[in-house]
Length: 255
Image 1 (cartoon, rainbow, N blue to C red):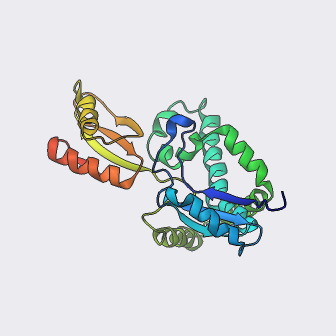
Image 2: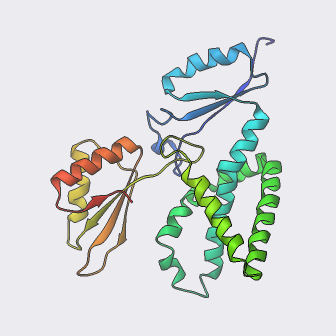
């Protein structure tokens, strides 16, 4: 009726996995939860916060327009770039058969978000297309400047390009939830012997420490491989690290 009020909401939490099996009771805890009423001073917004306080999220009220512009920059556009980088490798795969193997390290990490739901990101891209188009134009201009610096062999310009990016990136908060979910990875050097992976996962299971992903980065005969274990939270990762350091002979570290 006339008393109905619509307040948009965007909890910035989740993972690249989808479906009910990816659910978590603490998914929204300490995450930013953007609320976007048509009028920022709407008293019903405070009422909604009370309804949602059980999520233990950090609420921020912004306009719908500001929300769409901000998430385009720090979430939607990076997903476009990640998918584009993967396409770059895919298109060159036939010509360079080794590419897929060489891309298994850092490249795989920086494109991790490209494993998200294609349907969801096609929907999001269409819904926020005007902001994405503006960002693509700015990105293209930025790349053209880099291209010209390379063509003219302008070392100082290129150095400034990388230095300014490093300076700003190093100032970003180390902890906390953002628009793109964080990945809490633990690395374990393991010998190439049968049963070593199950020994590690069993110890974690005995202590009730849940993992979200596990992968062997390298395993060749007579040398150590690297086991990467991913967790939902920093706390779970730290608990796992302390446990494995005490109860296994393997080198355990955060990269």
